[in-house]
Length: 200
Image 1 (cartoon, helix red, strand yellow):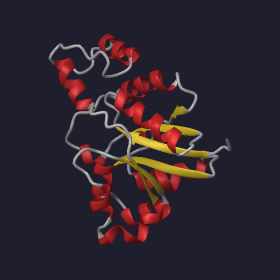
Image 2: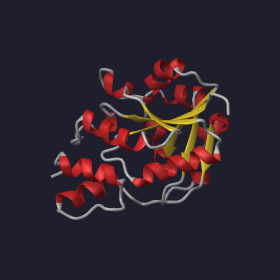
Image 3: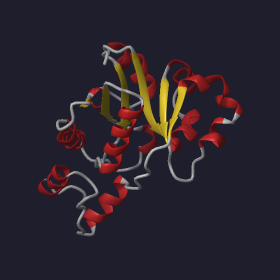
Image 4: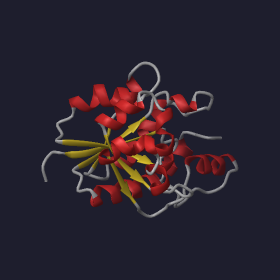
C-alpha cells in the first residue's frame, strides 16, 4: 500500500471511546487507508463555554489506544498551536507537511450539516476531501441535496457503518455518578481515567 492515503480524525476525545475506534477502523478498511491520524483539538471554537479536560490527559488517553494499532497514529499539532482549532488551518498548515498522496478529513453527518458555520467553509469544501460517517437523525441525501453543497459533491464521500451510540459526555456522566464504564472505552483508558481521577 502506498504511503499514503491517509485520513485525519479530529475531535475533543474527552474521553476517547470505542465508538471512535470502531468507526476509524471501519473507514480505514473501506477506503483502503494506510493511516488514520487522530488529532485532538486544542481549543475547539464550538465548545468555547464548556469545560474540556487538559490537553495532556486527552492526548495520553488517545496514545494508549493508538499505540496498539499500526494503522493509527496521533498528532499534537492542534494542541500545540496557539488559539482556537480551526480545520481550515489544519488543512492549510498541517496537511502540506504530510508525506501523503491523498488526505481526507473524517467527520460525522452532524458536522457536515453544520459545516457552513465553520471557518472558511468554501475553502475547506473545495480544497479538502471528506469522509462522512452516518449519525442517527441525519440523512446524507437530505443534507447533500441542498444547493450549497452542489459544487463540492466530488470532495464528499459518505460511509454507512455501524452506529455505535457511545458518547464522551455519557461516559463523563457515568464516572461522575460513580458507575462502571467497562466496555464503553478501552480498558487502559478506563484505568487512566480512574488513576488520574478524571471527570469526578
